[in-house]
Length: 150
Image 1 (cartoon, rainbow, N blue to C red):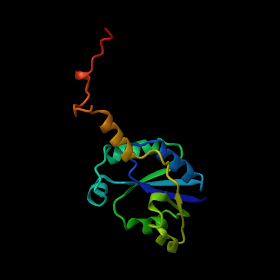
Image 2 (image 1 turned 90 degrees about the vertical axis):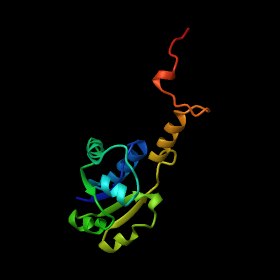
Image 3 (image 1 turned 120 degrees about the vertical axis):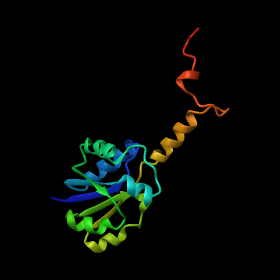
Image 4 (image 1 turned 30 degrees about the vertical axis):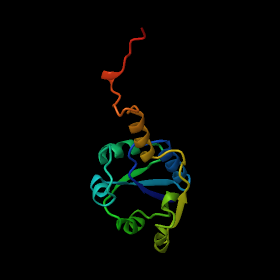
């Protein structure tokens, strides 16, 4: 059995994430997703997630390409994960190109997959924020939208 592993935050899950997971799974038989914990995201990546670790884990577990979801708690665990989970292939998006080549020394194939160019969680956040404010800076809410067609 060929084991593949990938890492990420997977907040605001979107079709770019699904594309990555589908292509990662196609490289082997068993896909492990290492999901950044809330503490790791905040303390090390300086990111605030919208969904909690448990919520993101449930979403990932519902995707047919994913066989196992485990927590990521620090940058250093990647080396030990390769051995503990008997990994053959390590996969990341190509925005991380070269950053994990050191894992080749652990006997693992390292693959950087092209990202889905038109989508990212950051783009979703920006687009939603921009769409919810008019040119005057007033937030659009249910209270200030006229729904009467007359």
